[in-house]
Image 1: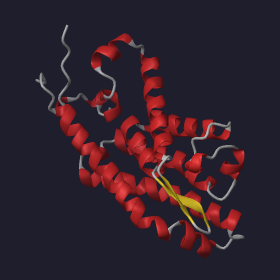
Image 2 (image 1 turned 180 degrees about the horizontal axis):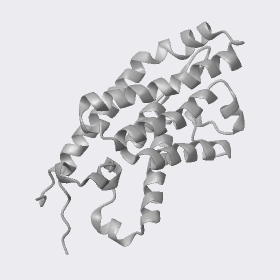
Image 3 (image 1 turned 30 degrees about the vertical axis):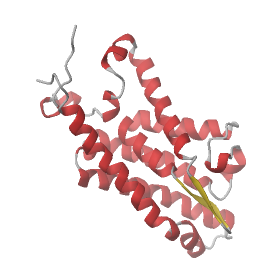
Image 4 (image 1 turned 45 degrees about the vertical axis):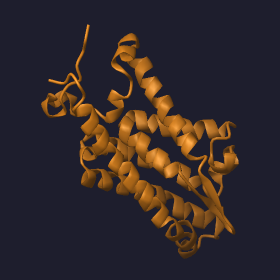
Length: 215
């Protein structure tokens, strides 16, 4: 039996919360999985993506916060999975890092990392996942401008938690030092990751909306 992919512009109102993650599991595989198993599989994929993105890490001398690919992994997984699954993926990532798996930047792990200078960024990942995931469910990721807006808000949420946390734990509460060391040096790097993540979604929606066999 052949099941065709629905056209995005013909989705009924109750299905408009679909995200690109709903198309990640091949149809024949999806048919063999119950709903919970399918959601769990997608959450694990999102967690793995964040962990893999953390492998891209460049240490900054004199700064406890390295350049990493984590933001890209967080934004991409949240936009793909939506609010609940994206939030679960980032929470699982933080949890497995805290309990001892070396999934944080530079292969680090443990509760000390979460409570240390870079811990605020990890907490910010969870907040960003919730924001970006919900905006994706609302359709912000269907075009480049909306995708950039969603990713920008997600990135801002990460800094909103990470910078003050860094200032308190590493610079004795000096917020200006936190901004100078935990925000300004990373803006260009994060802008590149933001645009790449935002551009990926309209392209992905174009692909799944025009697959062979669509009606």
